[in-house]
Structure formats: C-alpha cells, structure tokens
Amino acid sequence: MKRIDRRQLLRGTGAVVALPFLESLAVTNRAIASEGVAGSTADQPPMRMVCIGLEYGLYPNDFFPLQTGRDYELPRLLSPLAALKNDFTVFSDLDHPGVAGGHAATHTFLSGIRSDQASQYPEGNISVDQNAAEFVGAETRYQSMQLGLGGGGVSWTRNGVEIPTISKLQTMFDALFLETPPSHRKQKASTFAVNRSILDVVGDDAADLRKRISHSDSTKLDEYFTSIREVEKRLQQSEAWLNRPKPKSDYKLPKPLPTSFAEEVALYYDLMKLALETDSTRVLSMAIHGWTGESGLSGISMGYHNLTHHGKDESKLQQLAVIEHFHTSQLARFLESLKRSQASPDTSLLDQTMVLFGSGLGNASSHSNRKLPLLLAGGGFQHGEHKAYPEGHGSKVPACNLYLSMLQRFGIETDRFGTSTGTLEGLS
Image (cartoon, rainbow, N blue to C red; front, top):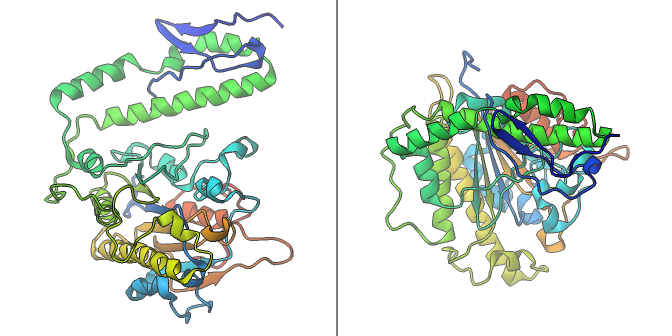
C-alpha cells in the first residue's frame, strides 16, 4: 500500500477537512470536525414526541401497580394522574437486556445501548427522540430541543455523540420567542454561505484517499463523513429558518428567575408545552437530575441522590416520596395542559403528542438497571392499562420494543430500533 503523508488533509477550492485517526496513517491524528451544510406534509396534524428522564429513577414499590389490566389500583406515585388514567399506560418488567452499571448506564434510557458499545449496532446508540427528530428534519425551526436540569442529557446521535442540553430557562425562552437582530442574521447568513458542503468540494480528494486506505479505515472514514454531513444538514435547516419570524406569545418568565429546583421544573414544563403548541419543535427531551441550589420542596433536608440510596430507611423514604410525588404531579399538570390544547378541531395536543416518562435506573438504592419505571401517555395509543412483560421462555421483552412502537406511530417506516425484537405486544 502506498504510504500516505501523515499530514494529509482533504482539500478542494479553498476548503480543508482534517482527517480522523486512521490506521493507514500509522500516526495519532488530532481530527478537527469541519462544519458545512447539506440539506410531511400530511393531511392530519403531525405527531410529536416528548421524553422525560429521571436520573435517579423512581421507588419501585410506589410506582408499579400490583394489578395488571385496566382495573389496576393506582399506586402512590401515580395518584396525581388519576384524572388521566385513560390517557396513559404503565409498563412493568421492561428494561435494556445486558445493560448494567447503575448511574453509569442511565444514559441508555432512550437508546438501550451503552455508548461504549455503540459500534456493535447498525445505528449506534441513537436515542429514540433523535430517530424521530431525523424524520421531522427541517419542518420545524428546531429539529429537536434537549433540556437538562442539574446535569447532562439523555439524547444521543447515531454517531455516538451526546447532545448538549439547554440548562437555563432564559436560553430556552429566547430560542422560542426572541428574534435574532438583523445584524446577527446577516452574519449567520454569511457563515452559511462560506460553509456550503465542504465534503462536496473535497469530494475528488476523498475518493482518491479511499483507494489507498484499508477496509477498516474506509469504514471509519465513512462514519466520520457521516458526522460531518449531519452538521451540514443541521446548518441547512438553521439557514432555512433564519429569516422566518418566530411566534408571538404573551407568556413571560418571572423576574427575577426562580432559584429553586421545584420552580424551575414547573417552568420548563410550561416552555415545553409552548414549544409544541407553536410547532417550534416536535421532539423534546428533558433530563432531570438534582438541584444545585434549594429544592423548594417542603420537608426536604437531604440531597436528592443521597435520598435515593435510602437502604429502606423510613425517614429517607418519606423525603424521597415528596420528591417523586412532585415529579408525577408536574407530569400530570403537563399532560392536562396538553389535553386542554387543541392540535386540530378534532384532536387535542395530547392526542398528537406521545409523552414517555421514566428512567434508565430501575432501583437507585441498589444501582440496578433492571425493571425500568416506564409510562407512556398520549400519542393516539389506546391507554388505560398496566401492562406487565415478565420474562418468559428464557427471554425478556426489551424496552426498545416500546420505542419501536413509538417510532412507527410517529410515522417512521422501520422494523428495528436498538435492541428491539419487534414491536411491543398489546400496545395499539
């Protein structure tokens, strides 16, 4: 094989792309990701998806009903959702087979695949929300929005990149409603023009390089170029919306902004509802960790994480119940607000929005990733049941079967997601 210059770059009409590490180069390469651009309508209202992930799980004894079917009794944590019982389904015994590691594995919540094992799967560890976001494309101003309270997020691209979160209320409000000044729009437009499809202008150089590298390097190069194309695609989508006015709203954030965890969570839910209502995005994820200031919850004297490691200590369990009851109360308030809002004359916003609520942690006290607490509301599914999927004939039903069902309802023609073995039986 012809030796390749260790300093080789792909070049074309002034554009330059630095290469990632390739075995054929036999040298460590500091790859610099280059930016560029690339590029449903339906008669019925579009489907939307919201995924809400709790870093510290939910206390199993207070979340899972004892009975299955439609006539189950709501456990303590689901009691705030009593008026919405026919609008959601609770799932038992679903998780991600083979995934372990406690907190280190909660990032698999929406993908079913650990980030360090992504290369073993055809679509990597892309999360279900990002799969839906790819389908939406440029139909909305934001392909998706990721929110994070007190920590990281739960959303991953198919190239194994964790998507950064919006962690400030003002940032999200401004993204939804604050117009970009004309001078900034002009500057952005100029940037888009300069960065038009870098891979197109270095295409000949890239094709020549493929002939001279190993098969494994060729695969790696394709993955690298795919990630660049993703950047280009997002840039093109941003450009398409650059000069379109943002929606108007009478909603105002309180001044000064709240400093307590409870107030922040409530306002993030309000902003998510507005994002859906204005069709600014159709895909949202929110990762909820702990608080960095005050909890704002009465009777809480310890940290959230500390309380989840309760060891069945009754005093800790009582405080944990306050926090988790707050979470399901806020979920109920969010779902009720979607139900009151119309997506069309015949359907509510909840009918057109599937809301997944749960965690990648089954039992925080024992650091278990088994039997994840999962609840799905809205989205036009037939709800009102507690469905259990215990292990049978030596196999478990993966949580990704639920996610595959969600993607199909979203409108995506696919028969696979993550570790799925099919769609979820009994969910229609």
